Length: 217
Image (cartoon, rainbow, N blue to C red):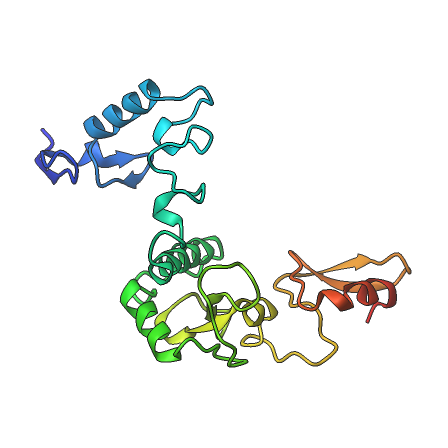
């Protein structure tokens, strides 16, 4: 018989290890609690077939006055704390997708918070003033100095979104450089020339985009 030795974070009851297994993943809540949660959500769906408390059209109690989820609204809550959470979650997803995730040396909340305090709201590269609310060029972001490594503590700095996208930490870019490529392919332009193209293209200087396409610079 399987031993009952794992405590559920929700009901605080001890269950067997198999009760916390969900398609190969180890959950923090037991099967009983997860089943109850699913049943509760089904019973409390709104006319939009969503959970009432999370429905923006119904103005659920999880939706703030800015029509965003309260837990993720930077205008209602602590914008730096929320930004740190997004940085860590996004970094973990990216590293796992690129098979670069290192759980031992991966960045954590305390480390990122210290990075932000040490940088004094200045970008690591261009020294511009950083902000944490609006998604524009000076939005604070977590940057890898070497893109062949994951988001580990020895490889991360705080930079603005513009410098992060341009990947100046991974590749020294000259004045005519417009794209950073992670996975290069060859495509044919309308003019007939073959140019390098990334697996996904990141635009750095939008005013030069048309010149790049037309002139293959």
